[in-house]
Length: 49
Image (cartoon, rainbow, N blue to C red; front, side, top):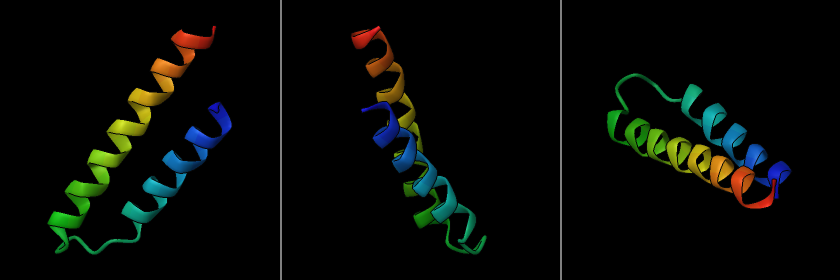
């Protein structure tokens, strides 16, 4: 599960880096996904370690 979550986080970060600064709504959505995946990674760490 760790690998999958980290992979998805990486995709979200890369996607955000490709956006133009004018695309604020999409950038905010990407930030939201990044935050969610980071939270899931922490939760997964405490559940299985």
